[in-house]
Amino acid sequence: MCRDRRRHYDDGFMRVVADLIRGGAGRRSLARRLGVPVSTAGKWVLSYRFGGEAALMGERCVLASWRPLCERCFSAV
Image 1 (cartoon, rainbow, N blue to C red):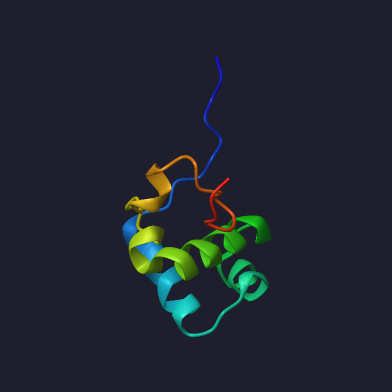
Image 2: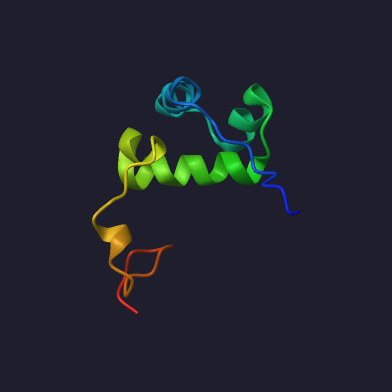
């Protein structure tokens, strides 16, 4: 049986993440302070830049549901 090994973060933790990013923390300092992988912290920073706190809290952006847009740069493909 396959087990989901991904960690799931609660709303309180993600609010702390948003506060740190809003305060200017980058992906490396965020990862070091919270004990998460740098790649995860980098995804959080990008999510916050493009969608604000709502994106970190798991709310979907209208643009994210439109598949012909490139996820990295939001330009039409």
